[in-house]
Image (tube, rainbow, N blue to C red; front, top):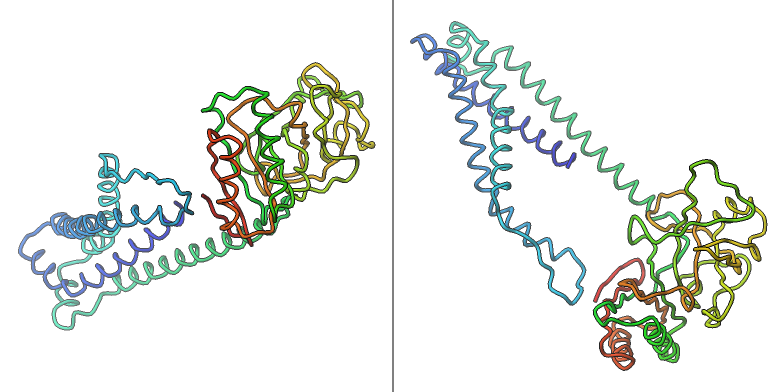
Length: 395
């Protein structure tokens, strides 16, 4: 929006300069009208009216362009296989905003010629515009100021665009702590099928078993949270024997419920300990995996594996230490985060995500995956996304 405003100001300065140059050729006309008794405010109103008519015409021409641009927006969205609905109706607020911009532009662009005409005298107007049509010293200075404004605003826009591109490139180069290349991601809409907890776990186990035997599949896992997909995620209050919170401190930490193979699938390094297994279920003692920032804060930098963390009224044992990553946005500082085993802690919710690392072409693998999902449970609708070589696609 700032860039759009700067471009609008550049256009206003450019148009004002053109109108000022046009008014130079009309200096004799203005001088004659002033000599015949016309008021200066009347001439100023005439110039503003002419500018308003010009702005109104441009606004009317802009509406078809607006409709065309709105219709082209869905073409920029990757294909999902589903219709993309965009609201392109021109309502009263759009017309009101357009009318406001039209008036503002007319005032900004027409104010300079009108102001110059108010300051000029009859003798100077007749003399400067009588024969040669050359501009006066005042109009020359005004045009020079407008040109300087255009150059300055254009420089601001170019510098801002350059800084944005540089920041965007720097953000892309930030290591996120996980690797999504050649990883297919899917979300299952199981809430519409009213799955029970046992049914969800049975579905996930059968689907994992089927996919792991599919040629080209390296690893498969599930989760209830996708890194950097939202500004906030699930969390729990934690307690440790090594950390005493300050008065009023909230010891809530974001977490994710993940299945076996999650760290292998997303290439998240396990620095110590082990990964979750299918045996980490309700019949086994509660366990968790923490990241480096969690261990540094709540274990005072001591070895994390084997230590206890109190979650929801019960003590769980740390069985692994994972590397720090980015969980909500690329520029965030290292933050405490922990993982819980899918077999023990996942309960039916709208969030059930599938991660599949494969060596096959996704265009070939997608139909096979859909057939596998339908074979396990035909009621499990799935929305899939994958990434290959920094290019994201959806189906």
